[in-house]
Structure formats: C-alpha cells, structure tokens
Length: 300
Image 1: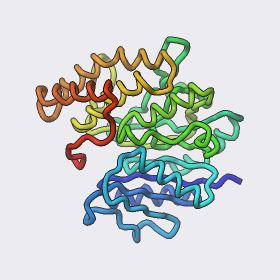
Image 2: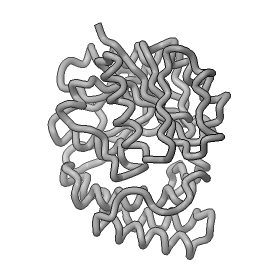
Image 3: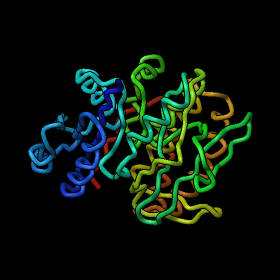
Image 4: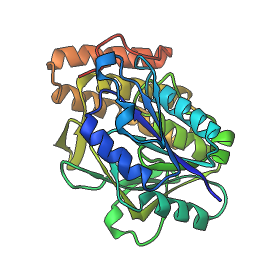
C-alpha cells in the first residue's frame, strides 16, 4: 500500500488561507509535513491550528525552496512515506487530486518520476500550458484538449506527486538555486536519465502563479516581484551551462535570455534601470556559478 505524505513549503503565509489548504490536503493524504521558511518569529506558522496529522518544521530563516523541500522529504521518509506530494502555500487542490494522481502514476507503469495535475491560475482562471519536447522542437500543449495523461518535460513543483524510489535514483532538488527553476531542473534531469514526467487532465490544482499577469508576444505570462527575475535569469543561465539536461533545453534557455531581459525590464516594479542592473548581475552570477541567496529582502 502506498503511504502518501504532502510536503508544504511556506514563507510568510496568510494563516486562514493556509489552514484551509492544509485541511483540504489532510483529507487526501496520510500526513502533512509543513516546512516554514518564515524568518520572523511573530509571523511563523501557528502549528496548533493545523491539526494532529501535520508536522511543522520551523526553519527560523529562509533557506530557500529546494532546501525546504528536501528537508520535508527527509521528514516524510521518517514518517514511512512511499510517495511525496509537493505543495506550496498558494495552492488549493481539488478534493480528489492526490488520489487521482496516485492512480495515474500506478496506471502509467514503471519509470515515471512524477505526475502532476492541470495547474490553473486563481486570478485569470487560465490553465498553464504543458511543455513537451520532440527532438529539437519544444511545443506548448493546451490542457483543455487532453483526455488522458500525457508526457511532458517539466512540471511546476506544487501539486507534483513523486515516488521516493524515483527521488533516490534521480537525486534531491537543487538547494543552491534558492528559488525558481528548481522544479524545471529536477524534471529535465530526470528526463535526461530516461524517466517520464506526466500530467493527468483528471486532476486540477488552483494556484496563485505570480503577482500579476501580462500579455507578451501573444502569451499570458505571470510576473512576480523584481527579485524573482534575478533568480529566474540566474538559474536559467546556470542550468543552460552546467545542469545535466538535454542539449535542446540548454539551447532553449540561452536563446530565451534576450526575451527575459526585455520582459523583466519592461514590467519592473522598481524602475527599468534598477532592474537592468539586477539582471546583468544575474547573468554574471549564472555564468560564474555564484549561486545561493541574493542579499536582498525576500519578504515582499
């Protein structure tokens, strides 16, 4: 029998919304491990409001998403988990999401590293497109047309169900990326090793994908705070140059660098000049391998 433990990472969460999301999870999984990256004691998660099946790990400071996910996975193992369900504080699963993902994983056969739901933005109501590579061609699939699970190249971390046997073979999530592209790198690393990544249209996750959505070159893109642009660009460059991923994905990341520069500079919150300087630093750090946490405020 599978034992499913959800791993939820938080950072200054809205308490009422978090309690609601965790209670939805508790109805679907055997246990929940919540890793709180909040670095202000007065804003830390109140464990007493979450229920007896929730284990709360207070980090005391923000160690980044990858480290928090790896710590939560370690705790899930200690609780006897065979599978983990990665979640974050801005996600709300449909009532049967976890069971649907588990069934999809079982039906898909061996060599599946992860299976995820259709992810829908709470602000726009639009689902995230699915990313699939065929040779050197990378295409975006509309989830609405799917009738059965489909292979993709990567998934957003939140809502992803992973068997621990796959994690043992593929390795842990990258901690030095701090935030952003951690899920992409892990999935592309798994794909390079011959594992499959699936999305099933029968499961859905409501997710807050960014501070705001913008239209850019005919697409809806989700933009976070300015500091997220630094991590996105830096980690994309680091992934293209050094991660164990397929060559088409290296080229794809490098070719997108000019678009990232234009996009983030155009929609910067703190001014275009400040953003341009931050992005140039991101490119330099990605090339030089200067990783980890950037010394700026991450609370906003």
